Picture 1: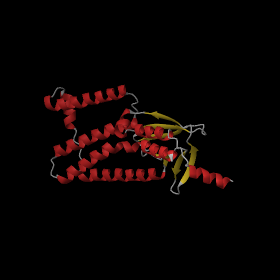
Picture 2 (picture 1 turned 30 degrees about the vertical axis):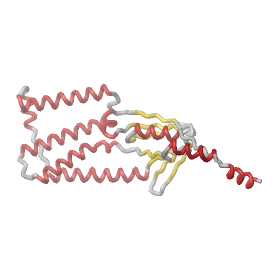
Picture 3 (picture 1 turned 30 degrees about the horizontal axis):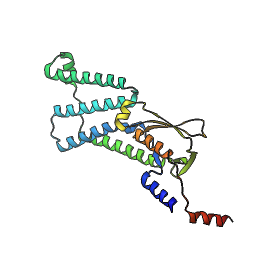
Picture 4 (picture 1 turned 120 degrees about the vertical axis):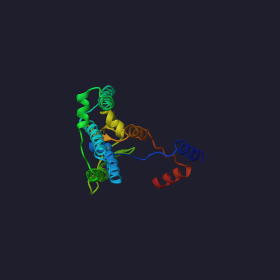
Length: 246
């Protein structure tokens, strides 16, 4: 009876816990969602107010191109340190601030004329087509990651891949993890980073790129691998086991 009480109290103390942690690695195009949001906003505005004059339409298209350009910079280059992120943000702020000041006070006439001469055009069809293309790509990425993912359990690491449910299994005991925040912007956009998994039976590490919420996933895996399941037998169960063995 005492053993049963210990078991019940241990369950209450530990509380609910995870039986597994699911890991999914996303392609870098997932980081393009600010461009998708900007296109969606542009599509809504140009659809609801089709009578926008040429100047308003040009400003909207120009700022959409600015968001897209900055987003493509994030996809093209890595900013592994806070200093590089600060430098890039400072340069962008200086450039955009100078352009805005030129439109108000004409500090640099040639720069102001160049900025005002830009008149890109985009109608609602342009924005809606881009929203549809990116939406289809994101839907495909979502479907692919449902069939290609990893499960970390207390006793094993399982890789699910393929439509038919192919499975590769690795032992989880003595599993080593390495977390790398390779890009500050990627971490800001998706809280993502690189996760390196070292199974004890593999000579090479398993590399998962662009894992969202990587800090939380690391904490969940560490907590899961620290769990030690202990089953406390009652006196009746021990007697039944001895009878069966006899």
